[in-house]
Length: 324
Image 1: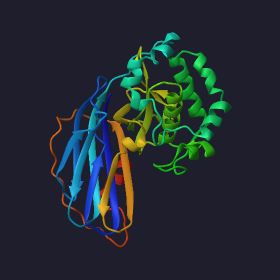
Image 2: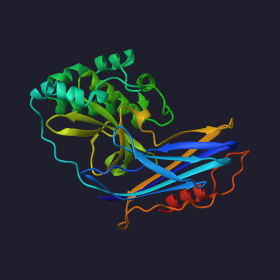
Image 3: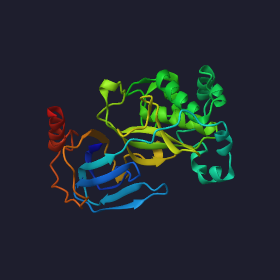
Image 4: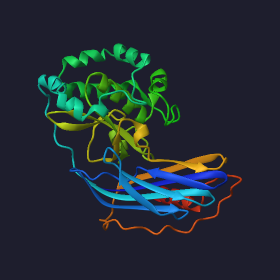
């Protein structure tokens, strides 16, 4: 499946700031089932950017805007060809639990076995596990247990944007029994690690299928979980939509939790309040794209520093999406 992804991010500042330094996790991965056809990054105001691989092998883009500005626009455009995930067996043997206890597995995937940040046990999580008899799943083989855990989380929580924030702990979702993809991913990751199963957070995009009852917002980034089963390696689960990861999922980065791989993160010099606007579009590509090339940022549009608002480029982007 050839997919086209457009990701628009704007930071509006109430007053000009003196400098912005940013890091971006927006380039889709290059894997056996995912071919990166093209990736373009445009920055406005213009800025030189460079990339590096972080400790988990993710592509990270870094740039600095060293002069005053009241609007920062980041446009990422990618074309990705995805393949279906391998067909999984109906179940694994019970010896898989013992294989995950090996010194090699526990040493190789140490970072994805211990609590970290948003993926840490709480009393509310323990109550949730008891309420749904989730400990009984360990009587099943690990693959069956993961499929049922994925389904349980999907059914137990409502998908409701606005209840939680990017930096919300899992207890907020557990209290309200609602949240978004990153909340459900953190809850599943925490349970997996409690059971001795290496689990990592995956940020990316989903080509949404409303006819197939996907709950995820089609105009937002997405997140899911990968667990390491020695007989199968990394297997992806989407607890938001009760799915196994498929060719509709486009992975961008992996980490211990959201804080390792946010789409964008940075700091600025100044005391102005900031406002963040994000727009995402994922759809089938109409034609193949050429190999990635360095892009020339466009000229910076004027903005009203007193009243942060979407600029002309943002409004044009919204109009284009409405016409599709």
